[in-house]
Picture (tube, rainbow, N blue to C red):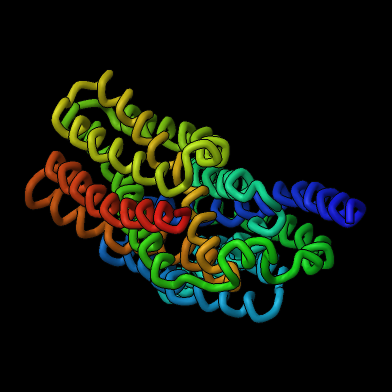
Length: 397
């Protein structure tokens, strides 16, 4: 008996080291997701497309990713397919490369869709394997996996600025290099990943062997609404800094860099904090803080205060995210791939799809109203989070 337990513990420790391989895959995938928006101004500047035309690039990639990501998760639940991750990393980079090849929307939009499909292929299988590799410390494991996405999302625009600024649209070729190298690396680990299994037996036992789709849907509702705020902050914080605070564009860009870097640190801390507080309670608490901070940002247009608020928003936005994804996975212990596809993919896409609505509010009522609207959105997300808190408390009684 003791030997079996010792063997299991050793296996969990061995598997945890693969979290960093999965984190690297997440980074190489989300570099392309972060870069996609940053490419749009270059398409306008170099190729002469209109704003409406380049918006098709984001729309095509986002919609396709939202549709197919849960489907890849379902396929992964039926049979382990770790090679999905390698192919996903490759396609994500290949699509970004294709965007810079020919100044023709008939090539650019399909290339963006290919990149979106690659991103959709990686996340469900990556999230499922990260959950299994983490063993009993799932929140910490998912924090490691998630921080790869944060770093990739922040690095993508930097690569765009450097390489497209230097080489023009052909600079998108840089995204093919990590895609090829890391996809090959992931393929070398395919056999090891296959040994992880399809489900976590202990998690299944803890949930009575049942998938709880109802409460899972509530968590997803909260995450989806939260993603509207996440994308809204990325888009409108720099605009607010420039147009309301009267600062130069460089300060607006600095704010987003600060927001991204602080988010990486908060993501790493998520697992440790949630182990002490609880994932549902942490989500609810962060949403309360986000409501207050967004109101403060809108109501006190003073640069030093705005910078401090941006730092705190980044902490609150990212501190709860990995542990909430872990919580959502725990409600579908028999369908980890599906849970990962929806939690990492569908919820994020909803935020991107809803962002133009905030733009309409900004055009009609001003940027201050945008942040007031996001505070209201955070309050709606909080309602769903409190339902999850109540469910968790009731389950423990």
